[in-house]
Amino acid sequence: MKILEANAGPLTNFEVIKFLKSRGASKDPSRVLADVSPSEYKVYDYLVETAACNQSQENINEFLEKSKKYDLAKAELLNIINIRPSTPVELYSVTNNSIFLLIYFCY
Image 1: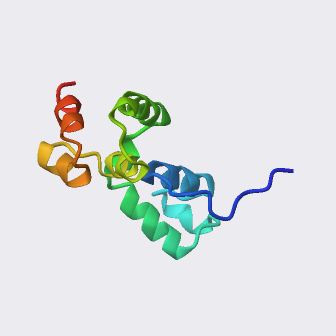
Image 2 (image 1 turned 30 degrees about the vertical axis):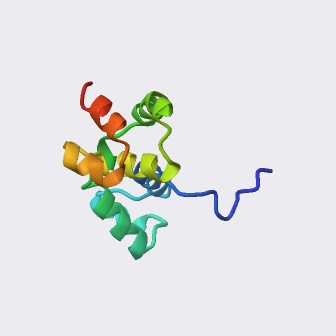
Image 3 (image 1 turned 120 degrees about the vertical axis):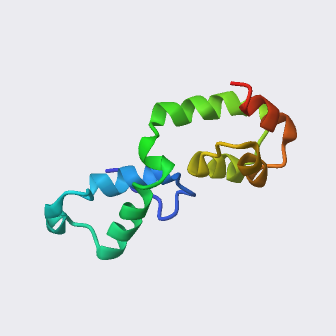
């Protein structure tokens, strides 16, 4: 039997969507039959309108692998994954690592 930790640490928005889907959350009209609370549906409804709904675990893993050489803090990585900045200004607001900023937009 596997024992889950009460607080395993911060999750990406993608992981939260994945968890809520595993509990039955969806945009389906019959979703009221799922074992998901109204507050969880509010979170789900919000997150499916963000960049997290277009992510995959493979994309996140690839990003984390490429980011290792920039020595970013875990909080910076989490924010970049969740926000998915598309402009230098957005990225700079998440991290002050200007070298990473230049490399990120060279891809």
